[in-house]
Length: 141
Image (cartoon, one colour):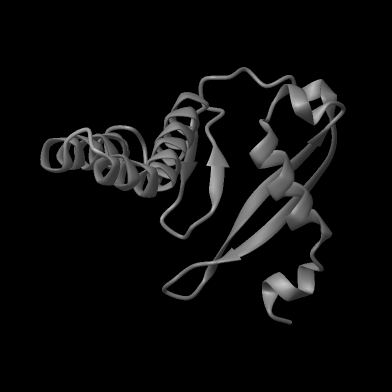
């Protein structure tokens, strides 16, 4: 199963990450007022608010770029609506991934002439990490 905008609950998580810092700042302004103590509370909350906003922004960008997380924790890209130019493929390999209930599935890894045209930076980094790992580690042999 792939988490999508509709099924994954990611919009709710984004809303929580945006509303929670706004509520915290509003509540501290309402209770503490615009005094020095209230200002200090705002300064203490500010780093957490920035982290929450950055997290919500990264979720929003992931949804826009058609990135999704499978139920086994793998980051994947949806190419179902993209016409892929098969003539630029240089190498094809598979990477096994163990499933939670035992068994395994194989992911098809395509190496193209210019990977940056077809994937974003996060996926390229993860593919480089996966590509450098010895396949025996993945299979457990």
